Length: 137
Figure 1 (tube, rainbow, N blue to C red):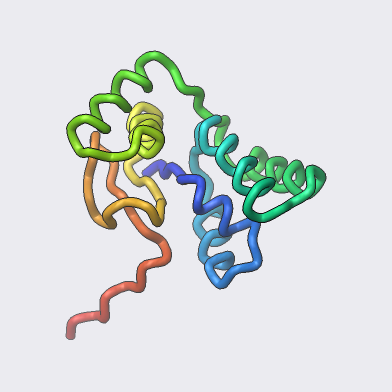
Figure 2: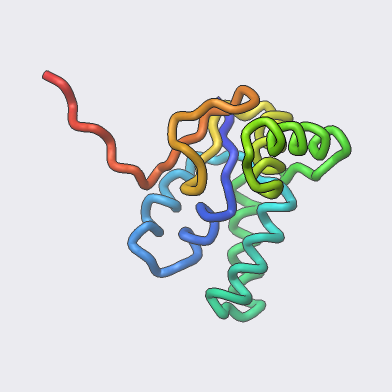
C-alpha cells in the first residue's frame, strides 16, 4: 500500500530529536510527498530549525532519491481539500495534504497532527510515533 508523508515526518528525520529514528524508518520504506510538504519542510527548516541552505538542500536531495516524484497541487486537489476542510473542520493545509494523499492513491498518511486511525477520503491516518498497544494473549 502506498504511503504519503506529512511535513512533520520530514522535519523529524532532519532533526536531532528522539523521533528521528522512527521518521527515518518509515521514510526508508518509500512513499509520496507533495510539493506543499517540501515547501513546508523548507520553511520549518529555515525558521524553526535554523538550518542553512546546504543542509536543507542535502535533505531535499535525500527525499527526492528515497521517495516517489512529488505530487503537485492541482485544481482537483484544491477542490477535494476544500471539501475535506469543510466537512471535517481541518485546517486548510492539512486538508490539502489529505487530498494530495487521496488523489495520489495512497492508503496511509503518516502524520503526528491528525487523529490516529481515522479514515478520510479513503486515506487512513497513522501516527508512527504512537506506541503500539500491548499484545493480547
